[in-house]
Length: 211
Image (tube, rainbow, N blue to C red; front, side, top):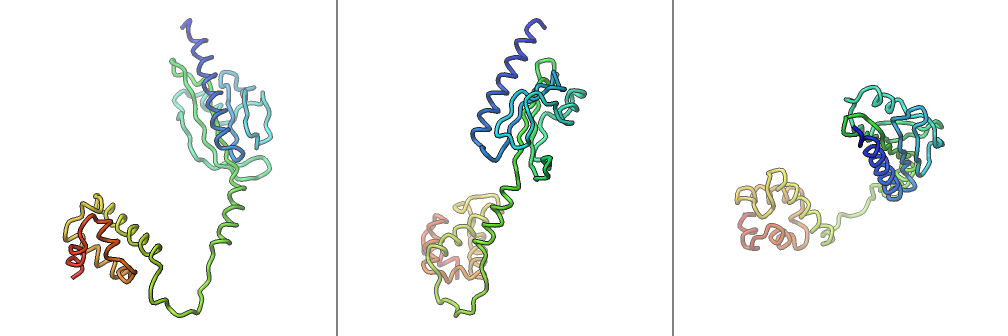
């Protein structure tokens, strides 16, 4: 027990280092706060990318007090909904740190301001939106898009069967070819060579599967 103060000091130092590193990585969207749970009424000992307006020496949160009162409280509470005082939506994660006796001594809390991403999402939705256009159907599709669509469809088909594309059986390949035909992907330029390359078989094998 004589080593406990040194152990706790080391753990808190590591928590401070982790918080600084995390905050540098996710700045400026993520607030990172370190709580000293041995002194819950003045718990905040570090705050990076301050988004909540709190200060050093402020008390811990209700979650922090819950850990102080209950050593069996979950060490990780991830991605829960939260809000800042001004109403901004927040996604929070709290990580409790115990010493060798099982006592919570500190926590690292991450608070991501979702309001920024809401505006970004609206901008992206507007940018990527399309409308139906009254134009003749193209007789052929761009090879780059078609090849990628074929490869993606093959990968999805194989994963659903717990194997790689190269491990598909003959019957499974025939089922796959039928699916690709129904999806209109065999009409894509160079569809069969693309399919053969991705399956790791000869073009003759693919043409045989398609019959």
